[in-house]
Image (cartoon, rainbow, N blue to C red; front, side, top):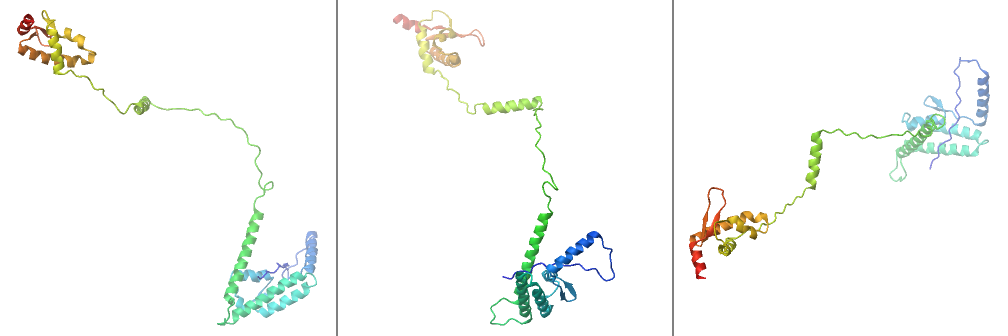
Amino acid sequence: MVRGPVQPTVVNRPSQGETPAPTPMDSLWQDNAAERAASDPALLIDVAGFEGPLDLLLFLARNQKVDLARISVLALAEQYLQFIESARRIRIELAADYLVMAAWLAYLKSRLLIPQQPKDDGPSGEEMAATLAFRLKRLEAMREAATRLINRNRLGRDVHARGAPEHVPSRATSAFEASLYDLLTAYAALRQRQAITQVTIEKRRVWSLSDARGILTRMIGEIADWTALDHFLLRYLPSPEERVTAIASAFAASLELVREGRLEIRQEGAFQPIYMRSGPKAEALKAVE
């Protein structure tokens, strides 16, 4: 695994002809910059007319603005060795990191210039360059994420939390707006849901013709004069609901008895009471008995 170089310190140098007036604060910063430059030397590399620290070269390689095949690896390695020689007296681990980077760049240069051999199983120069670009992109993404985290608003400095929540009493009042038609419709729907859906009609008892004939035959002996038919049927009606069927069956049975001569019936007008009495044949049978 290739370790990236440590970010060197870049010292901004004013261009020739510019002599800004120093201030007490500038003098203090210049003294601190001089002390930092003495303790941490900067690395300057000439690459295709560019002059700057190593981060500039890696930044241009990440953006594919400079082709690694055109870089003078010998000059790069020479400047690295000079920097390592001066930095070894200060930080040995720093010199080792830069030496590893210089050796790896020299190897990458050779892989890009020399065509890949058929028996070579190692990665090609293009693959190594792509790996370097990927690592640089990942490093840049981490730096951007760190910058965004630092620039976020901080609680207590940029933003402040709200105080204790205020208790605001609330009261809900229900208001109904409905017309008389709406009330009737709602009531009808409620009653319809509560109504009995299945209606059972009880079977009604019906007098048969034979039952009515038997009853009239028993009543003939009790009839002395014209008597209304309803007067005799009242004793045989268990409920008022059977009055219609009793009168209809008794009238039909009385017509048969009139035909046999055992009963006489008469009616003074339409919808008038029906009267009956014993017939001649009934009187003869009574005399024989």
